[in-house]
Length: 392
Image (cartoon, rainbow, N blue to C red; front, side, top):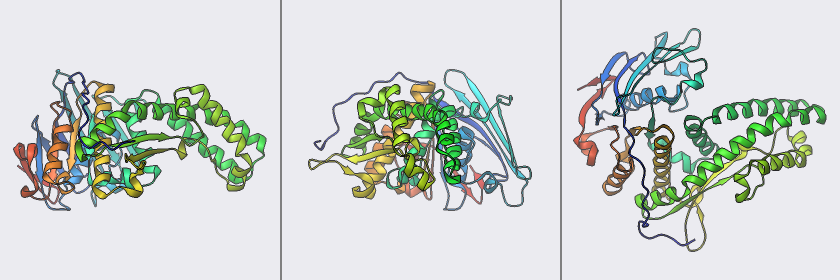
């Protein structure tokens, strides 16, 4: 594929979605925050504070109300303020079209139980409560989406699809449960007939996971190339690599995915018994990210510079924001954690221009000092933070 030297002449038109706005956030004993109540301007805020002051903790609290898990992979007990018995978060979200949602969560460290309420009602399943905050986070840690192993990219796909594709979370959970059961039998040296009896329960949800991942990548591949060019001046490509042998055209055919999974399990049966693990399926997928070059595509993980990897990661987050617009009909709240440290002024300005694709998104920025800030962030209301205490 040829390298794109300039921004391609592609216009992506989307209906204007009403902005999702965080108006009030209450925190108690979360990370380094005590009892805290914050009211947010519609446009957003700029939070200035030294490293360790609680800037990222504040963004993590907002993100937690979207998925009820840590932004940084910590266990719930690690989120409890030192000496406290648990934590509590509550956010009130409003939309420009007049709608509103209140999401709250309380975690008891003694019982390790978590209680979630959406508009005052407790959902039957935690999965029914996710996705009400409509939040996208841009963070320096996002570079791991590109520089890290396949697990990082599978996790990204799973979060995006669980939040925005009906039925995906159920299929993923059923697949993971079936995979654990099957791997346990393989490690125990169970009879082949017993292992095979578990195959249909693995194949059915696995096919759904593969089909949905492939569909999402196919739908957004052109936008990924566009965004990487617009931000970094050079196009990158993303391609879905399933953990089972399938041609690209077969990825849209669920029947062929099922057949490929069944054949792979049969073909690998002896090796799986030797290794005690299932060797084909979506747990072995990857999202391939590569730079377009006249000499052939170059894997960004191995050959991309730090700047190129960060550009690709930002492009993925922009596509995540577009997925929320398309699936939920709202403009997501954007959290940007020290984004100015990662890019020069020109590239930062371009990112800020593109991140909401011309839509009016609420944005919450963090930075260690005012001199690092430019563009839209500099015009926002400024808050200070130190030791988990926010000053206005």
